[in-house]
View 1 (cartoon, rainbow, N blue to C red):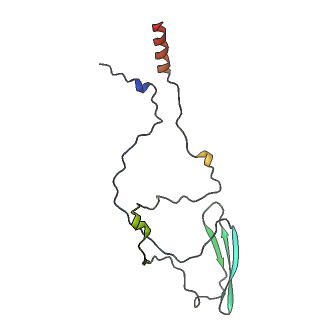
View 2 (cartoon, one colour):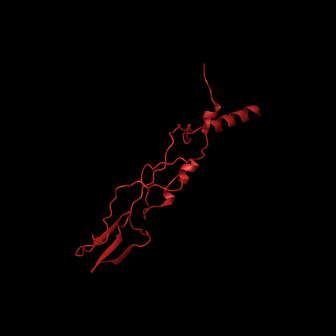
View 3 (tube, rainbow, N blue to C red):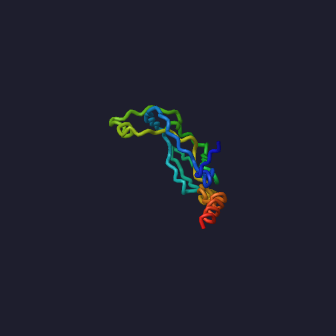
Length: 151
């Protein structure tokens, strides 16, 4: 017994299969507050002076090329620890007076799998692709034979 499927004549391997999304557990909002400074990525280099007590401390902030990093150089001859608390990256819980809007809307949120930072050498034209339409030789031959036999 021979099984013949006419759809497979023009079917190609450029199609994707759809899958039903698995049920995931509900996620909750996780807000973490970090003390820090705001840095504008369009500024490539900046410098300033921090006044603390009787002395002043100079710092220079410079963007590291082809990365999302910054280099911070601080003059260390002036001790400002009495006036400014050290900046730590330990998370601490923040309690809000008003209910969190994320929890009210019940939107599912999760952290991205990886960091996708901007890179100046990116080229958007290189990304993505599309399916192609190709002529099936078997279907062309079948239609030609059919049209010749009907005449």
